[in-house]
Amino acid sequence: MSKKRLYLAVAGIVCGLLLGALDQTIVGTAMPRVIASLGGMSLYTWVATTYMLTATTSMPIYGKIADIYGHKRIYILGLFIFMLGSALSGMSQSMGQLILFRGIQGLGAGATMPVAMAIIGDLFPPTQRAKLQGVMGGVFGIASVIGPTAGGYITDNLDWRWVFYVNLPLGLVAAAILLIALPALNSKERRSIDYAGAITMVVAIVSMLLSTAWGGRDYAWLSPQILGLLILSGVAWIAFIAIERRATEPILPLWLFRNSVFSVSAIVVFLSGMGMFAGIMFVPLFVQGVIGESATNSGMITTPMMLSVVVGSIVGGQLIARVGRYGLIGTLGMVIVSGGMFLLAGMNVATSGDVVVRNMIVTGFGLGITMPLFMIAVQNSFERRFMGVVTSSVQFFRSIGGTIGITILGSLMTGVFSSELQSRLSAALPPQLAQGLSSGVMGQLANPQSMMTPGGSGGFGQLPAPLAPFKDGIEAAVKGALSLSIQEVFIAGFFVCVLSVIACFFLHTAPSLATSPAQGRMGAPFGEGLAEECADSGQRHPSTAVDG
Image 1 (cartoon, rainbow, N blue to C red):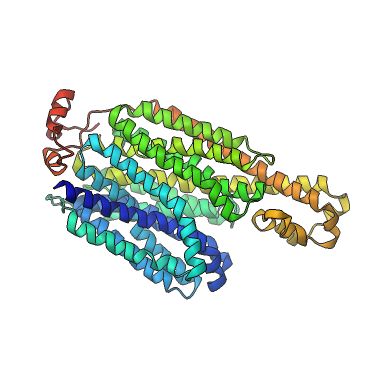
Image 2: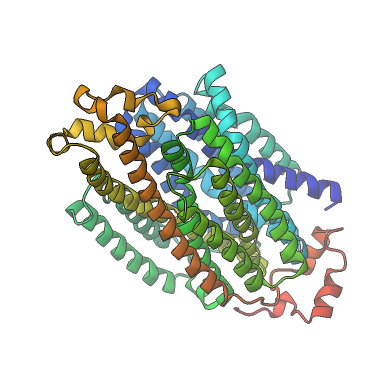
């Protein structure tokens, strides 16, 4: 490939990644207007849950199929499925239709992230992958910065349907560029698809995610519905493992876990996704509910963190390329993340916006350092023909960790907030009023997002007449309860991140097995001198590569 064509291919991949990253932030901003238009407030969470279920479940399947039929074909197929879901979502006439079509969008999104990273592994030798994947990680930070603003502008000035339609031109541009610039890189081997493994894995993941999404919110954790889903998930996982042990071409090859780099990376990304990504989801709630900022100002406070993620991604890519010691760099990044989580856990009702910004910058920078690391580590530990399955597997564990973490920590926050609010209201109100609070009033007070608006207007100014004289005490009780509940979330996230730091100590730097002579030529001029590099460093030729 010429240098010009290589850059064009990278531009196409970046456009595709930006498409999926922007969609999540833009749609989140527009959802209140969507609910006002279509109704169905009770189905609000399913718009995101369905997207998450289909995207997470399909990631490992896409990775395996891409290794068989070619990364280019599957990536472009994912783009077109995503655009189809976007067009249908924009035409939705009910919440039920929107939920269904968001599921189709998720099926497309499941291909874009892991297969994009696999394509980077195809096109570039190990010495260049870290820098490129650092840039890819920065794409998500940029999307998080401009997405909410773009979503608000589109919703206010056009129509909420355009938050979906806007995906079409960007997706078509990305697909056209990749069709022209990206080589096919198809496998010449005749390989089968593990249908039984795919079905059992889908059942296992969907039932597990549904149990964590519904448990403690829609149903009690020990209810027949949740216990049934957990049992179904356990049985499906056992069946999946048994099938994968015997399958000729397994969806998730169990021998991957014999490679210490892969197994440690999977553990770290799962824990970091569970502890850090889920914890950060509660920062906007703290800013709006405890500090009392508006949603717009909340976005401005969180923007520096996303910018620090971009900077950290670039720094992390450079460190990997220059130092190359995965364990050292991973430990450094996770120590910084843990420090940021510790700072977040120290926030309370007296915390200012400037302190929140500082804490988020620290956390975001550490996260950015680790974002490209584990993907690079596993890609460099396997031959290129496994690039799709190992890349999608790492992304799968990150997504599963974040999903489970958000659900569990959300349940933790809800439980602590409910009990703490009741206790604080009992102390703030006369006994007869505290005991006589109706479920409707308690439900109103337990919704801090609607209660707390800048300037003290809003729910606290619309209290029932008997409670109006105690407005200040009630407001302090709600903010105090919310602050403590979010603090518990950050404390839990901190300890999970500490476990990630410990796991990083077991991550070693293995000789790269992922580069072939063909890749060196494809990557020219980036791949020039690669053969000499391998010879000087004592790395083995890929033809002699063995597991781990």
